[in-house]
Length: 300
Image (cartoon, rainbow, N blue to C red; front, side):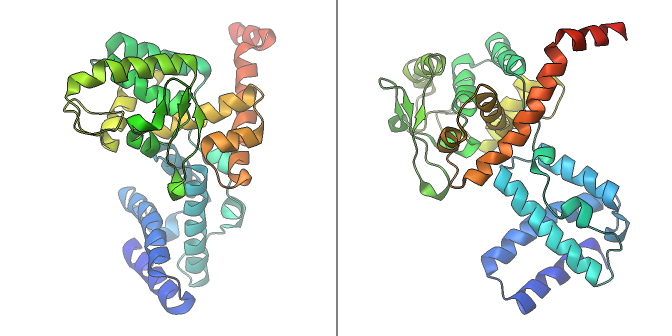
């Protein structure tokens, strides 16, 4: 059986035996199609995807896709159920217990940037962007406010209170929250809103517009992120800036529940995932900046 046929068999099983809703089945199918497409791309039959290859897939997909921590958890859950079923049916001979029993979210989440790397992105925008004000405003929303890309692109003029320095994004579940607007972010957003934005002949009340005055698409935002992070030599997505925002706030001593409110997480457990990133970030910063660590590198 092909990888697609095995997936179809599993989805049929969920419908017939588990009685799951059509929406849930569609969600599982969407997640698992990413996996079967990866198998096909790499010329792998499911039975030949051992734990090492599975590890490669999990790191690759989490690094390239714009997954939030809860999206990563859902994706792993879908894959774990699929592989357990295939193992039981004799189509997957490898154990999944060690790698998928508990999603190692801190391990698989997209890499976060250092403060110096974030600064270099803003500097690259200032140096080479054809629309400096707009692109700077976009990165302010992603990093300084920690917004999801969907929130950044949908935020409207009336959702920004420049005078009182607040953003009011609408997040998941159509819930609005308050996010403080820092002085530098306020300055850059104000420059775009009062000056550059008007030159696009706006046809929408969205803050971030393309050159034709229409709301910017997700693909357009991805291209901007790719352009101004290329010099970093690593995979960076719009969501990487949200991860970096959370990690840097924790490293600076922010209370976890305050961060929960800023990120718009319904469950504190989702926010706690960032403590894993924070610990790794602290370790990397120590190795990069401690005098004895730096001296050790210079000896090599």
